[in-house]
Amino acid sequence: MEVSTKHGMARKRNQHKGYQAWCSMHARCRSDGQFAARYSARGIVVCERWATFEPFWEDMGATFQVGLTLERTDNDKGYSPDNCVWANRFTQANNTRRNRFMDTPKGRMTVSQAARAFGIPRPTISERLQRGLTDAEALGL
Image 1 (cartoon, rainbow, N blue to C red):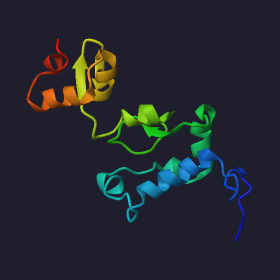
Image 2 (image 1 turned 45 degrees about the vertical axis):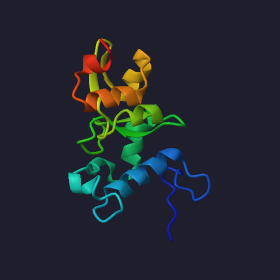
Image 3 (image 1 turned 90 degrees about the vertical axis):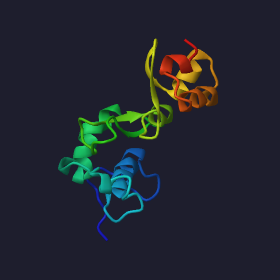
Image 4 (image 1 turned 135 degrees about the horizontal axis):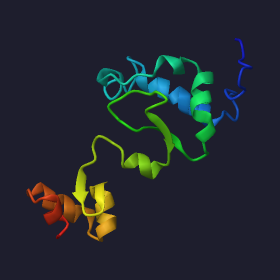
């Protein structure tokens, strides 16, 4: 087996987190992988430029920080330089398809963000929205 010496980030021991993110991105987008229904079946693919690690790292390496993960800013688009950033877990949790967004006086935010911003328990807001109240009414405004 040939060992890559191009970037030195793929070592079995102490593999770089940026390289792990690149590998995981490709694994998620494989048409026969365990995540196929959430990725490849929805048309989520990795751009041609990022087929190999080096161009990915050229595009994303400068902003990489330990503790951040690869995030698609638009969840309906694939992995590419214009749709990816490094984000913390909190930011990623607020950028999922299952989140319910609300328009509030403080701007557009998820129900969880609104609960924190307005000091109202999240289950209370969710229950009010399920009953058909408007965003403002769910926040007691």
